[in-house]
Image (cartoon, rainbow, N blue to C red; front, side, top):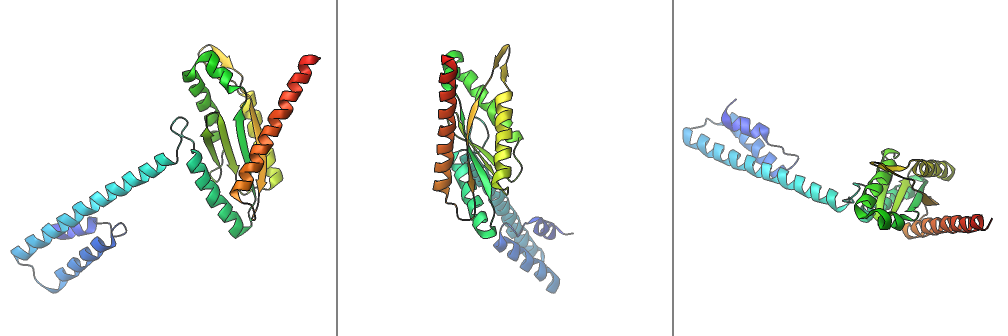
Length: 234
């Protein structure tokens, strides 16, 4: 195969239709007229320029994709960040409206996490957050998402499950978090998390789902605190 043809076949028209069409036209021209040296040299220059432009477009698209990924990812835990979670939630609720799907959101708060930072420092606190993030991430299906919203607050979205199934899975994940201590060197810290669980369906709006999950989480924390105060009196 000649040099111009070799260059043309390396182009990727799906990334740049204009470049692909130009390559196709040049390829057809090879078949209908002979190529003198000057014309061949010109075509080689054109195709070399097109190949360079295509490579630059590919690199640019890769950079854009990487920046988009970073803008949706929490730097500390590599989970989705608040923006990424809200984007996933928007798409999930849109799918629920189209297909009549249901699912569950859990708002997750690590209990008394401030005391971990106060007693052991923020570096170890960050390690503890990464520990929680790993446990969440390892128990997500491909269709689910776990996110760190801010500080010690996380969210889990369990899609395409009934409210009962989703609540059972969320409680299983909560038990896993509560029963898996964070270990760093000789230090072992039991961590506990409160879960606020709210179901969604085809008619659910994101603001309402977030509000119900947040309210449920604070209600669970209130019951836990009341029980602790009662136990201290006994």
